[in-house]
Every structure is written in structure tokens, then in C-alpha cells.
Image (cartoon, rainbow, N blue to C red; front, side):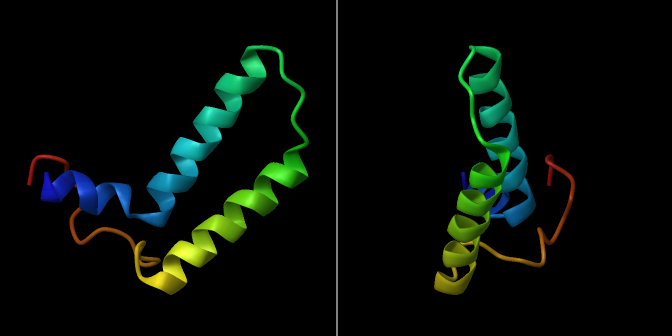
Length: 66
């Protein structure tokens, strides 16, 4: 569980998951302004990094099995 939390607090993982979520919403036919999405995600990630919830440097280990 600790390994999963470490991966979910990685900035790159959050950005990738957010991008996939937006892509999924667009596939359902919703019209989303891409600049607004980028701004919102960037602001949210910046707040989480400043609060220390997410790390900006990435994971210690890139392998999921360790």
C-alpha cells in the first residue's frame, strides 16, 4: 500500500492520470477547453507540491515490483 501511495504522489503520475481522464471525458462528447485544463492541473499540482503531498523529483525507484 505504501508503494502505491508513493506512486500516486508523484507529479508525473498525477499529470498522466489527469490527461487520461480528460481524454476519456472528451471521448464521451464533452467539449473541454485545453488551456483551462492545463491551467487547472498545473495549479493543483503546484499546490500539492508546495504542501509536500506530491514530490516534484519523481519516485526513488521506477519499478512497480520493488
